Image (cartoon, rainbow, N blue to C red; front, side, top):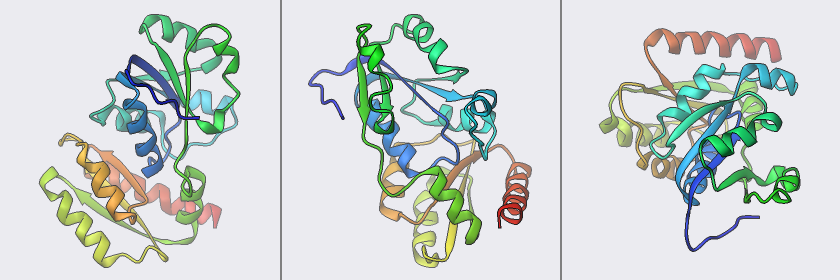
Length: 221
């Protein structure tokens, strides 16, 4: 359940894998930020995902760097093991609440008994990392590269004009040299045709992702 508060919490924690960052992730994190003045996001490590029998398409460094680039995230940390970590993080960062998606409803009720504020936010329906992986497996994909923030509007216009959502998987790579903006949410929300966004350092990182996608499609196809 999404808790509405007339006064924001000062510091909130949230945790997740954030693999293949999609619009649902962006929407959830923005609503997390709406609950507090400072948002700290824990990104699950590869080792922790393996422990949970979860396979991530992107490495912990790629996922961490993406979250760290978002302008409304005040601090990014690694999540090594939630059950043993939350208490240390809560104390270390002087947090006032922990925020999770509503797919975890009930899982953290034991923390409420310990006097913690737990907020469950609704996830965006109709989109998940699992859905995206299935789409990528069976669709053609197109890469769009953005190296300057001023290019954003034109790129989304091109995607909206040329891409048929039904038979294409659209990937937008944004250079790490430019700062992400809140307006990215509005462009993405209006488009609905960009399936995946990632930040890159250089062209080799894009080529590496392409090779990984092609290998994965062949393996899973």
